[in-house]
Length: 431
Ligand SMILES: [Mn+2]
Image (cartoon, rainbow, N blue to C red; front, side, top):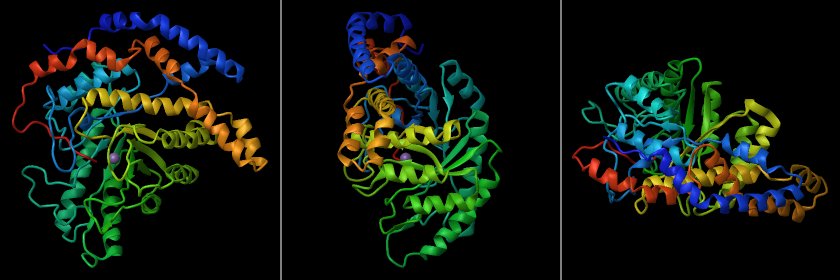
């Protein structure tokens, strides 16, 4: 029997801190009221937020160098669903799960869909994988996949992506995210322009196989594993390719996939302006594609990204609807705790951005008052919206303090007994 945290247990844990939460909430309501803001509207807004979980995030993804697996890690996609459901149960903001093939391949996708739905989950965009060789695959991706010189290798990579679309369609997904490790490690290794021509040719075939209500997300990344010239290295290349492919192609921004100090919020604004912002992989980083928990290093950047997203909604309304997903992978925490923390940090940035006094900001911009414009953003960023997030969770049946509740439940100890390690268990990794 699979252990799930009992609903009553969450309510009992919440009961310990409910009076304190209500006091904090009432105090914040007063602060916001003086700014002309209604806390209840913000709590409703927080309750409507969601960010999808990466299936690979519930295992200890590790780093490029090693994994140090923890106790009771999921050994297959069904166990991953249990962990994702637990994250959602306590946070109430992660109903979507993004699968990665072939890591999450199952013989019975319909059963997987039913089990996920029964746990209150659905499937977000699916991810293809041509950055490593799958077991039994006839041709190698050592020298590239969608951009390979060998047409047969390209055909294999195209077929894999189309297979992901078909599998995703059965699961109820509406999008395919393509991150490509292709590129060159040496000057002259390949023709820079020729590689991108081959990429576009391959992507056109995948694009043609998309169902009418699907999107394809192009995820750029500055470098690694191709260290000299990654084919889709930046948002400009991503934008150009998405434009070439057509309206169903959009750009996906992984916060860790840029050079240090890059103004990511400006990239977000540019892609939004030209209708090509498809979605995000949220994480945080100090140096490169560090895949650390969202908001753990630079929460102000996350807030500024959401400030641009708020602006996008203000301009374009419901038509502006990028997809949100976490993408993180490291060694030193319990993945369920990290995913809960990250989801809440992303939700926090969303609500902080909703607090920006947009009339004041527009006025300061009009007056060229840089200091007060910056102060206006800072006022929103500095506001502790924790009670709003906690109240939204409690009202939705989640945990006031998800990490504390999770630890008190001894979920991980249960999983350690239920899930002894097996050789060849479902993989996870870094994307
Ligand atoms: Mn990513």
